[in-house]
Image (cartoon, rainbow, N blue to C red; front, side, top):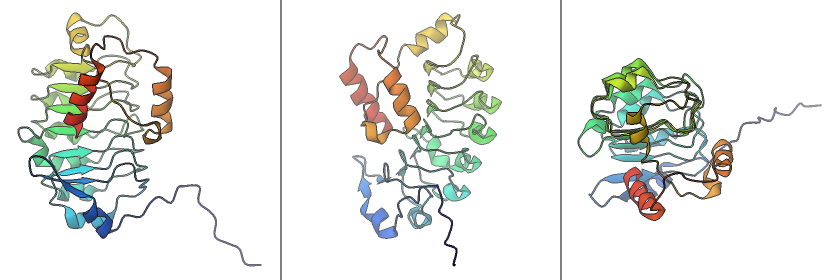
Amino acid sequence: MVKGKKKSNEPSGRKITLKMARDALKVTVDGKRRLDLSNMEITTFPKCLLKLCDIEELDLSRNLLKKIPDAIDKFMNLRLLDLHSNHLEQVPAAISRLQNLQKPRHRLLRLSAACKTPTGLPHELGLLRNLRTLNLGMNRIESLPPSVAALKELQELGLFNNLLTNLPECIQSLPKLQKLNTRSNPIPTDESPEVDRMQRAECLYLVREDCLCTDCLKRCREKTMFAGLITPNSVAQENQALWR
């Protein structure tokens, strides 16, 4: 009797071809090339994307990725990288070499709900010295690398829905920080007034249920109210435009 191949419990995922990637290319309102491969059940970073490494925006959010290769540093023109709602075991240090994430008006890196291990953030994250917006919400982060203190241009930092038990000391060294969201962390409630003021700008994101991973969907269902939310439609529209 011939033994069959052992079936893997891992999802096979969708195969992305170069033609599919080229068809997914769009041009933003300011003339930049955006590759949107979000919500496509991708489990492995498509190697064919390296042939399109001159694009300016790459959206791989809401997939099943566990690893981003070091070759991500070939996308030197990237101004926006969206990896949220994946299953990354760690964030590659190579992201720190994406120098165009540092340029004015293009300083956006979103890793929300991407990294599923407490130690998944690289020390090299601090090399993005001009980063203005960093969203690390809905992960399992227990601490931030001290190098985050080097992000002197950072204005917005999302740390909501993590495993932080105290406010990271490195945040104290961010002179331009205006918005800080540390909600839904096991942090004692005796926060300073300054931190409370920065956290009032909690954001609302509107997404379909089938676009969320199991953990995110569970958290959303457990959240019954949005404290301090006054104009949900305008807030959602503003932040959707920002992340896009």
